[in-house]
Length: 247
Image (cartoon, rainbow, N blue to C red):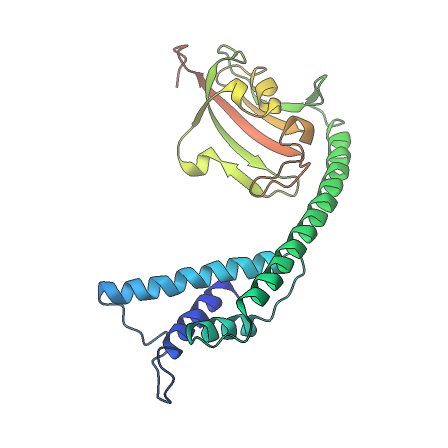
């Protein structure tokens, strides 16, 4: 059951527990959202449902499968003032659940990190053999797609670039092209693979960088980037701020 279904069920729970008498209640589809009060009530239900859905999805991601119908029943019982567990019991079982989730997440991260290291090493070893790929002393690999004729930036410069970032499996995790505007940043404030690589470029160039994990985010994870990920970037150097280079 997906998050939207959880939200709908929670909304139904809000309606069903409004009174305990046997009577026909409107379904979520029949609820009117004409007044501000109606929209606020519905929004509250959706917000709670989304929170619960995200928690359950996170737990299922590490193979902790809770009975979602019991989650909904617990919500309904709480609204009706009829919880079957004492508050101290609830605190105890939820503390244990949090500990278990953290333990399983840590184990999954460590397993993923080890797998990513091996995948990165294998990829870079093969990639280095390709014609046109240059490997620097640090282990950074790059390929010149277009050679520009402008100036090259220094580490302390602020550059203006367009770029697209991908994982080794082709997953795109970032793109200035999709945001519709170039990125502008000090070159010494980004991952070291970028700091080194962009200094090899001239304004007007487009390079492809293959960045080992130790020159990227290392053991950290961010968004779709998992620990020890080797990253692939296509980068266009559009200009150096204050240098008067062509746009």
